[in-house]
Length: 368
Image (tube, rainbow, N blue to C red):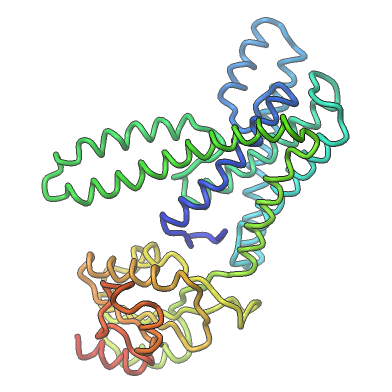
């Protein structure tokens, strides 16, 4: 789940929506127990300006502290992702999300031991600082995963984008031959943004309900949820696509330049377990323009999880749309049928599926 460039829009949507309720929940709890928002900083900056002008220096120092804590969370997210990249971890975002779970657990413990609500003193700084640090970390992490497309801790940009995409959807007939594509793209964005808004609001409502009934344990639901999604990512790793294996290099020497071979490889640290395919659409869009026939070798050792059919259908449809040829290697007819066959993958015909790499290379030569 938390892998760079490993997310389809559907995966980004599910991840962002599930994290948006955590932000709405945490923000509500911080408002109730501290009197200040933790998940967005626009209002905090405005409050800081008012405090400075009115000479309310204790409040100005507090709002400055909240801003610094949110900023520090973003820095911590970036550092932990870069650390994972330096150590060649494939799941770059498990660490920042695990840190967020730890910060929210600390927030939960502080609520348990401190008599809340609080309005001043060290207890206030500890509570709001921990919450703001966690929210800055979450916002930076999901921003990096989505390439800057999605935010989860504040709704200003979400509501703005929702308005823009709604207008784009209404005006899609003006695009002539591209009407269907524009309408489809705008509709997907509208659904994503509306879901984010609803999820944030739902989280706020759940936070208010939880605080009213069990105030001392109010932060345990989001902490347990974050630990669960980190566990899910560790349990079901994502494969990697590479262009360099000994077998492919051997065949590469006899194939024309416009024929390319890419191989799916599993995480060597978690071999033998089920794996998910990465975002093959994003991989496809990054291929060199001269590669017109592409062989994607699934190999023989990788055990693919339940998302394989959906990912293969997406990339096959993408190949058809870009007028390129995709050949899937390492997929027998029986395995093809187990994944759902043409019913689940209508863009992938049986002619595009080969049980081994040699046969796929021969088919590519024939197509050339």
